[in-house]
Amino acid sequence: MSSPQPAAAPEPATGRYRVRVATRTAKAFWLVAIVIIAVLVFAPAFASRPMLQDLILVFLLASLALCWNLMAGYAGLISVGQQAFVGLGGYALFALIIVGGFDPLLSIPVAALIVALLSIPVGTLVFRMQGAYFAVVTWVVAEVFRLLLAQWRELGGGTGTSLPRSATNDMIGLDFVAELFGVRSAAAREIIIYWAALFTVVLVVGGCYYLLRSRVGLALRAIKDGEVAAQSVGVSTTRIKFAIYLFAAFCAGLVGAIYFLQTSRISPDAAFSLLDWTAYIIFIVVIGGLATIEGPIIGAILFVLLRNTLSGYGPWYLIVLGVLGIGVMLLAPKGIWGNFSQWTGIHLFPTRRRIEIVSQASKDAR
Amino acid sequence: MILRLAGVSKRFGAVVVADKIDLDVARGEALGIIGANGAGKSSLFNLITGVVTPDAGTVSLGGRDVTKVSLRNRCVAGIGRSFQIPRPFESLTVFENLLVASEYGREHGHRGANELCGSILERTGLAAQANTLAGKLTLLNRKRLEMARALATQPDIVLLDEIAGGLTEAECHELVAFIRQLNQEGVTIVWIEHVVHALLSVVSRLVVLEFGRKIADGEPHAVMNDPEVRRSYLGIDDEVAA
Ligand SMILES: Nc1ncnc2c1ncn2[C@@H]1O[C@H](COP(=O)(O)OP(=O)(O)OP(=O)(O)O)[C@@H](O)[C@H]1O
Ligand SMILES: [Mg+2]
Image 1 (cartoon, each protein chain N blue to C red):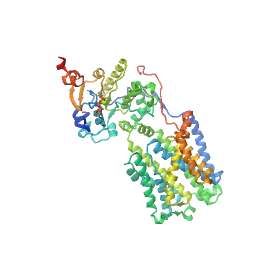
Image 2 (cartoon, chains in turn blue, red):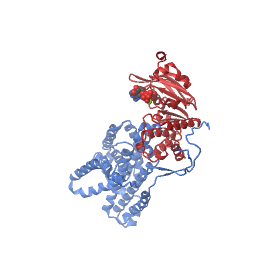
Image 3 (cartoon, rainbow over the protein chains, first blue to last red):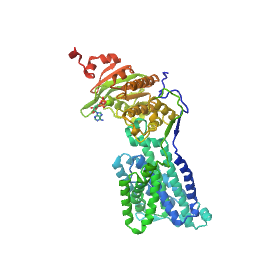
Image 4 (tube, rainbow over the protein chains, first blue to last red):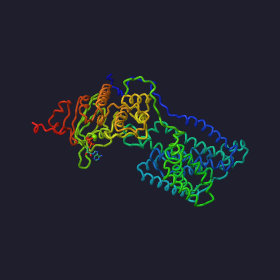
């Protein structure tokens, strides 16, 4: 009995406990999700170009929103500087294509990797700050990058630049897609970009869900509930937060690269826009539901629908967004999905782990 | 020696919570700590685990100086600890609280976490609450969770801070039996407790603190009969009483 080994557990009790994560709704949902993804993959065959463009935007905004949500809603990192990584992703892509002469499609992941690498020193700097200071510093860093890239003459300096037609005309896969769908090269390019955006959002949703279901998800919630207590059970809080920050930077880099490949034009103001890449994203997360995976996706869809409906009304667009955002914060602080899932108990991405004690083996158990 | 404190001192402003404390704990030992309110007992745990860094002195664990090692790394090195004022992860269930600890604790990333956590839940009387949110527990169950979560890190040495208060006689009896068994299984115990009779039925050595100073250290009954201890902790002045 008196082995020197720490023996908090009694005799091996293999198979006495069963742990479940999935719920019935979630299982049904996964079937639906596979159908939805399949339909989206083939959408270029039947969807109009404006429709595809809207979907690209939904995918990219949802990806950013999911990352922001992962940081703010789970890791307690309130960043108002994600535009730094979106912008760097866009500029890295332009530099790879224009200066480096690389293929546009292959440049997308390379640009995102460059952004992830750059986010290591940036993260080391901003992680020295806590709370509100963290937020301010992330914004300052984004501004610094905006000013720095405005100095890059080869990429148009402060006014920005466009991708040369020659560079995008022989993009990998272009001829294949053009032939497959019987479209001209501009449309084919958009289809490839659409797929890249779809891939990104699936990657981000999958990545977030995988992370939250893994032990990292448990650790994140533990950190939120009590940092000292989390550390005292062995959770390395900064390491986990930093990893989340890197993941978010990589994804923002992907989004930036894809978005600016789509527009074919970049400028420091557009690339490092606080409004486009952070303010709207926060709006999306807040109306959809913070600290859920479903919320940011719903928020992004709603945002693009609103944008299309209100696009003719100029400043009213921003006013309606503001009023809506504040209204949701005051009346339904958990956001659309947060409230819905509270009323119905439905979770499409369940992370809660339930243990069942299978046999009644130990009668002395109290 | 699993734990050694050498000349550990700490003060918060004018309050001295640790005054040149020397303490050796042998592997497999069961040590009790008593002292009046504010004597510096919980602070001693904070110094041992790394929540607080000492102004002077060293803390070593298994012969390794860990004075500058982080809280997290000391857990991984084998210290488990319960907080006097429970700090459950409120948005996690009781089972998930244990799961984090077992996934990140001493043997992080190991297999068999479910089995380990399940058995600890049963042994600490929390099986019925396994899937309840920790934020919804009663104070008594929160204290149980503190101990259970500390054990889920699979510590070599576990520091327990006032876990017997408020228990019924029968519950207290069960707790004592459980801690004794843990100790027999090889876990070193350091237990701060105001419920002295419970403490004395487990520990083989007793330390008394007063204003951050160690005023007694030895065989429990001898320590309890020490005049200085009787005066300081029990408020009994033998000379006046005589
Ligand atoms: N972080 C801190 N900052 C300032 N003062 C502190 C801090 N931690 C503890 N103290 C003070 O140190 C003294 C000792 O506190 P400690 O919690 O160690 O006492 P204790 O022996 O555990 O008492 P109790 O029996 O009430 O739990 C108290 O006066 C307390 O107010
Ligand atoms: Mg105390």
